[in-house]
Image (cartoon, rainbow over all chains, first blue to last red; front, side, top):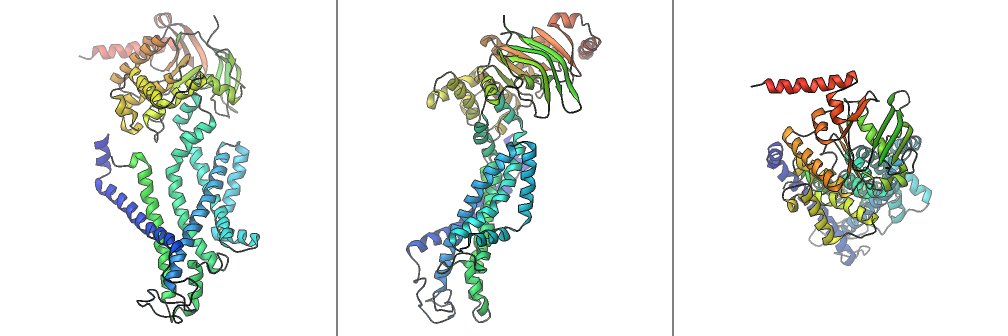
Amino acid sequence: MTTLDQIAAPNRRRRFGSLTLWAGIALVGIHIAVGLLTVVWTPYDPSGMTGGRLEAPSWLHWAGTDRLGRDFLTQIMIGSRIALIVGTGAVAIGAIIGVTLGLLAAFATKLLDDAFAATLDILIAFPTLLIAMLVVAAADTANLGSAIFALGIALSAIVARLTRILTKRVLLLDYITAARTSGTSWLGIVFRHILPNIWPTLSVSFALQFGLAAIAEASLSYLGLGAPPPNASWGRLLQEAQGTVYTAPIGAIAPGIALVSLVIGINLLADGLRDSVDPTRRAR
Amino acid sequence: MSALLDIKQLSLHTENVRLLYGVDLTIAPGERVGLIGESGSGKSLTAMAATGLLPTNIRASGSITLAGRPVIDASEHQLNLLRGTAAAVVFQEPLTALDPLMRIGRQIAEPLRRRAARDGQRLSGTELDAAVLAMMGDVALPDPERIARAYPHEISGGQRQRVAIAMALACKPSLLIADEPTTALDVTTQAEILCLLDRLVRERNMALLFISHDLPVVAGIVDRVVVLRQGEVVEAGPVHQVFAHPQHAYTQSLVAAAHAFDTALGAVP
């Protein structure tokens, strides 16, 4: 069995898989480390005007200063923290609501299930960002909490649909019937068999949605619907740099690189995770 | 003597197809019964109906009594108490019958723990581990310590079927339903699994409902057979009588086919 597997999937594939995981861990790890660091230390006071206006990068200010003379690197670093908080919060809310609804739908009667599936399809037809904007608008205040909640709600539709389909597929398998014939309760089946078996796919989806949430948060902030100042969200930094993009391009480039590196890191992590969570794909 | 499983005039329908019609089947405690028929004759459905696991779009009429309790229209909670305790099932395809992401040891531990809980005992930690290894020894799994830590894809088909049997036995059922347990296995492994089932059922004094399309396999392990064709019982009786003097034309053709196969095998030098 093992030898056959190795012939079918040569080692190169496996090594690449773990390389993906490590690259993802490294990129995301840098953001997490920086985000945690900003809680206790930043190069400069984030709201202190410590240099001239729109200075170019120098040894004193590695990423230059913004139009109010604040250190730009400090803002980018705080942006990591904001992006991680929003991503984690939104995925957590989306996962709790989405998985619960998806499981309920998979176990519901056919009529309820059909209605649920149709509702989800309609919800998913709207862009995540649009739903999030609607929720923020309904909440009437734009702050970090409302942005997290709005993105969580928007993501939950995607999670619910995925959970419902994955659960329905697992429910048809023999080992569920086998578990039922031996007297396992539905709750036992959900926690012992269904969740572990849909987890590899779900976790990859969560990681991808984390990236989606980070981008959506930047978009919300760009539109002024995200975290208000002094929370230095990358989206707001990009928006502020808009007017000065020709005179001080670093203002647009730096937050862009930060956002892209986080999202790529998370996607690599998702890919690597899938290989390590699933024992049938794990090298032994 | 009250029957362990008593199926009377069981009929199953979907909206426009008749799947099973007027099936009678009785199994006394400790008795071994074979259910024979070709693919699609309703063998497996009968077994599923006995444990109350019919798909929701199939309607059942007639009566099924398992361990003295009605199965048709019983609540999910009542059925759950019967499942495992009154009857446990071994399935045809041992790979899909095991959870691919759970280690073998845990899969066997789960029914053991549940059965102990139903009997009012707590089984956990090292006691549970010991019980799992003992159960694996009972089904003659080699190197139980290693296999307990393995995932289903890491062991052979015959070993998986032994694991599935161990899981069913861990429930300590009064009736073991074996749904074509040897069909997915090669002939040598088939013989081993049959011997194992025969020994375990005898040792534990369980009743056995053995479902198969394979006459010689059934003849070796049961006392009584019921022949099913297109959802109807065409013949029933002690295994020797049915095979020596088949009454119904369908059974006669089945027996003749098995003889022809034996002769063909014997004729090969």
